Image 1 (cartoon, rainbow, N blue to C red):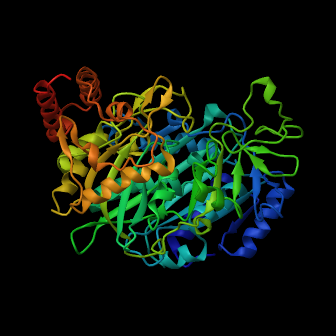
Image 2: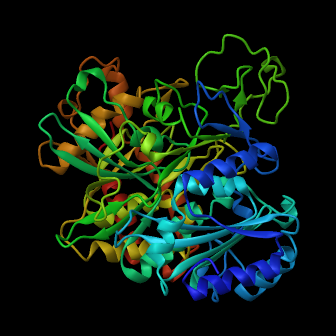
Image 3: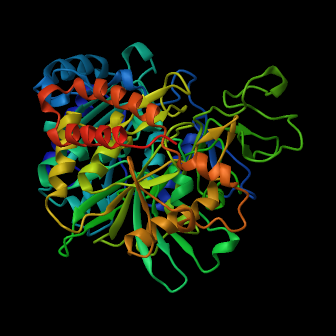
Length: 588
């Protein structure tokens, strides 16, 4: 008996009886434990030790090639009513799911260790925080959970003798993709995952709990669990404005969360609170306050370098687990877009084979990752462990759009902002299995992570907006507009120019012009000094293509039609209002 919570002990015994591990180890979260588990992982080939002089505490993991991304086709929401899961989720009856997975789990951990991983999502002592427990036979998962969460005894102390916790059962099994399931039981606060070791499918505190289960919790309790970064933008006079932003995976969310202002913005700072997930609740002042439930970064490696994200590069310099990247001859790491390698001789690709780029194969997997402690980040906010969180002044929705969507514009009011989020559409990346570059709907960058009917999720957003007259302003951003194959906007640190306009709008210091799609900066409102962006480029960045937007309205209507009468009428009203504004728009 390793906990004073009788329900937890009983559940661990029940799962051990089903999976039949050789031994059960309760994780305490100590440094000694992490060191011991890391040595075991190296000894068994799960991890490879990297150059400890250059990358102290860092290790490399290689996945099975059939297990390198989230698998949405294997991910299910298991509610008693199929309608509660909705048309955008895969649904399975809970009884069927429990029976099907129990047959797979039976005896699956024979010869293995079951790690009991108690973890706290959110700061210690915060009313926002929740406890989960993951049972896993993967030492890689256990070590990653130690980075990504407040793991071990701290979680058991928060749970006490009778607290509620999310039950997560995970086994890498034999990585059979035909028997790979990630099942969520929101009514039971339970997650069962089998035959995958990839982060989004196996680190159950991340997308599974912090978004899918937490979004269900949030609807019941009146808060928001969102796929958002949280950053504080500090002006030279010390004023800090907190913003949150939702972008699909691999669309620059981590880069934006850790942005380093360009030289022109001396005295400005960006404080990173989180790069991926935000839990937002109303504070006593009527504003939405946010915490980052995680304690680490599970970032996409390709494209990360000292130009795009210097703070991320510094964050991965120690005590980091790299997954599916290149290993150099001196046991360093490399990935596409990192920097120039002096020689490819002796490099080993992400599958563990000698790598010759002349063969046309990438050295690192396009969805290769790093798991780094948040405390490594130079821009980490002193508020990141604050129990009450931080007050959010602006919410940004962004995605990859090479056409149509302007650089930045502001919603007219809260419901219009919900509409901007609900109609978010992005060009796909390698973070999810499937085609890359296709256009897909991804409302609030949450489509794969909404733990219930998306129409009810939209309704929840609208209802939340009715609770206060101090709601954040809502903006749409797009760094990825292209012309002739080139990006029109330089992006990266220069995005500070857009953020400053957003901050100034929040404080009533910046002007705007009304367009059919929202409020846009006037030419004089957006700082362009020292920037190689022509007047023609600016016109392209802010043009409103009337016919193009008409086409998007038709596509949006098709997307919304699947929800039938369950779709909030407020979204239909916003679509109608946009059409009316477009109808009266003068052609250029």
